[in-house]
Image (cartoon, rainbow, N blue to C red; front, side, top):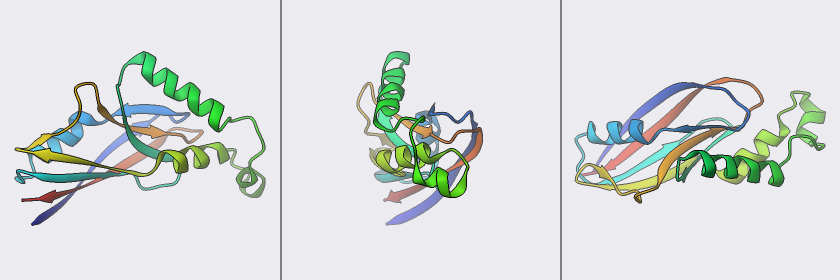
Length: 139
């Protein structure tokens, strides 16, 4: 079994910015010289998360609006009271979404559904530089 670690870097706009990283993950897996296995996609930090969605404008907006209902920006957060940075909602949203995702691949091809893309969501209240860690395992 081989394990290869790679990373993807990009800038975000914050405020529940949704970034499709499917092509970047595909490229990393195809260049890893591992035929079959899994790739774990992980975002370090406590104000962003990783998941899958059908990456089209309506579904993305629906997801953003659902998060606004689940963890609204304009309510009291104890984190904000302690640190004063106004991003308590982003920590809650990131914890609910999760920081990692595992995707199987075979013959160097991600086994995603037809309408399924890998996204990173930056929940923070300001633009950020993000790094995504990819750990590719298999044979």
